[in-house]
Length: 116
Ligand SMILES: [Zn+2]
Image (cartoon, rainbow, N blue to C red; front, side):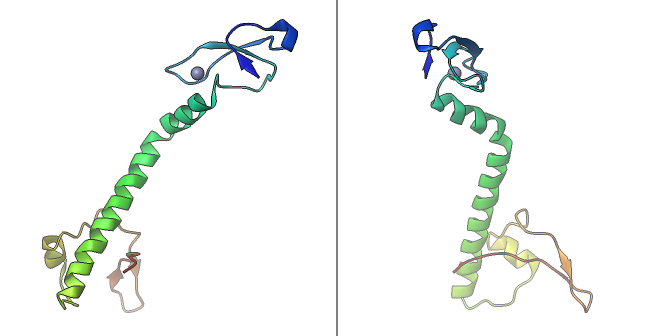
C-alpha cells in the first residue's frame, strides 16, 4: 500500500522518495524495499535506464527488416549471386550483421538471419 500522506493507522509510515528521476516524489508505504511511488514510474524508470540498449535493439531490428526486404527483392528478381556494391544499391546495409567468420578455405563470411 502506498500513499502520499503518512497514514499511521494503516502502517504506511515509512517515508521514501520515488527513484524515477522526473518524479522524485515523497511517498509513504509499509514496504521498506519499495523504490517507486507507482507501477507507472517503475516502468518509466527501467525504460529510462535501458533507453540506449532499447534504441540499439530497435535500430538493429529495423536494419534486419530492411536487409530482408532488399534480399527478397533480389531473390524475386532471380538475382542469386551479387557483389557487395550491388547489395548496397539494392538497399542492403552492412551495419546490422553478426560477427564475421572465416571458413576453412580462408574466405570471410557473414551470417544474416532472415525469414522469408
Ligand atoms: Zn514516482
